[in-house]
Amino acid sequence: MPVSNQKPMGISSASKLVVDEMKNTQKTTGQQTGLWQDGWFLPAQRIESPNQDARAPDTVVDLVVIHAISLPPGHFGGPAVAQLFSNQLNPDEHAYFAEIAHLKVSAHFFIRRDGALIQFVPVTARAWHAGVSSWQGRERCNDFSVGIELEGDDETPFEAAQYATLQSLLKALATELPIKAVTSHSHVAPGRKTDPGPCFDWAYVRQVCPDLTIAP
Ligand SMILES: [Zn+2]
Image 1 (tube, rainbow, N blue to C red):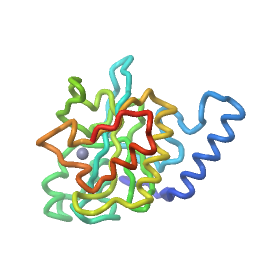
Image 2 (cartoon, rainbow, N blue to C red):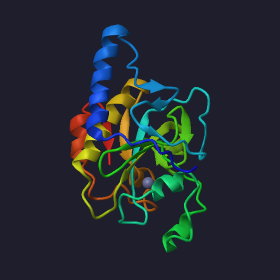
Image 3 (cartoon, protein in one colour):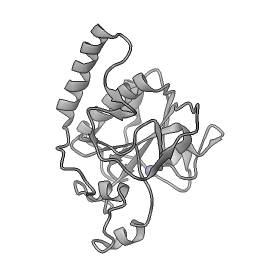
């Protein structure tokens, strides 16, 4: 079964849950937020992708790579992205699907236009999102990064609900991993990738993550 029937959580309920969880757990443990279990972010819908493998022992995961994807390109809301990351995309449904259905790719997270959050790979494992890439002289960004896909393209502004979910997710990631920087796929794979593209609002990320290096 490619896609679970679990109802995706909207951003309003997801963020409320994040805030409530943080309040509760700060009182009780003071250390763990209670939002994570074995690399899974509990407020997200989980659809595990086979396209993952183990990170090298002692890897410091300190980078977030932001992407954008829509399938077919420019079409929002369908099941195709989850199907692609689950190796279930039907090449007969669209000419573009035929070109990419063979790819073995994934990201840790996917944020839909309505802010719903899906997780495909635990952050403890390596997702296959960045490909040939380099960050500050370190090659193979998949090794040490978390990949977040936003449903979008190069021409359409992203939705407020997507930024709200992204903010909650970045804050939660910072409680689980020693994240130092947020960058774009186009930055780590220049000339090969353009996402998340010119419509992504980096000023927003700078505002909500003042302690991180933001390198679009
Ligand atoms: Zn990308």
